[in-house]
Length: 447
Image (tube, rainbow, N blue to C red; front, side):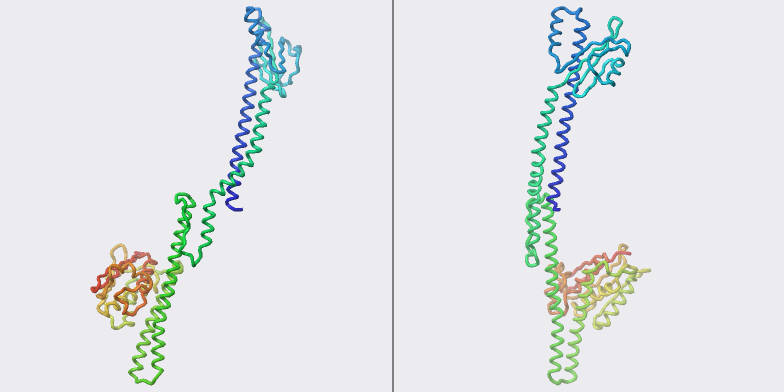
């Protein structure tokens, strides 16, 4: 069942329940008021009867005429009688009363009672050493007619009102949900080729407007991710294709004609260099994909970070013996952190590789210390630097600064480093001056 139907039925049910409850409440209060009002009138009739039958000698003619005139305006089907109370078995009643009511006549001073559609009132009083009982009964014909009329009116209103409430509920709910239905239709029409389209926002302050805003923000993130994915595939293809093309071209050139030993060695060096670049690019891509797709699945363990840094430095020196790296590690009992060994090694190697590559293998300074809040790793070079406008972009995959276009690289290194640092809940900052050098600082939290 759709929300539209559920809301309509629910609201109609609530409204009709309130409507019916209100109608019954009105009828119940009206019925109780009729009974109480008629009972008061019966009490007055008892008082009048008592005055006429027991105290007429004490009134003047005018007073008696006035009381008699009141008495003549009898109630519908009224009965009244005056009974002398003696022995219980000797009391004779002119009219028939329910047994449970009769048993109260001689006991209670005043008795209010009902017998079917007839109401009654009795009062006991003492005169000249004897007990007497006045009993008055009547039917509230006008009151019952008014109640019957009220009941018919309520029934008529319910007959018309209940279906009308259901119809109104369906109309109002459909009207209220129509923006949501339009939003759903618009959202269903958006696909990969129309990902730039956005949902219309009629009222940003209501729930449907907030939903449209949330969906639009989701579409923004999807479009950004989609564009990033396309850019990633395009750039990855380009970065992998370039060294492959160079390797194939150099190999084809070497095999096309016979050459001397020096020429073959030169070709093999070119092929090796391009293969190393390709291998580095592929490894970085694999690490980047692993972090992006499954952060929770990355194995974390306790690592002695200073030992890992030294292992990474020695490993990089083996790959690039021309790079001059100066290492300074502040003495400390331990540099234990919780992290992934492979990714942290890749972090150090990439930072060193960037420092050496963009400074043409000039001196690179690496330092490790503890500032009390975490472990700080700094890599500083004396290379070409990064312009202020481009520092915010260097952590984007495949972005390369305008002043390093001629330097071999894939543009993945810093992007991967930023992902690794973020995975380890650390912070990466870059300070750079063009033609003077760059300092990359990585702060990893204490375990």
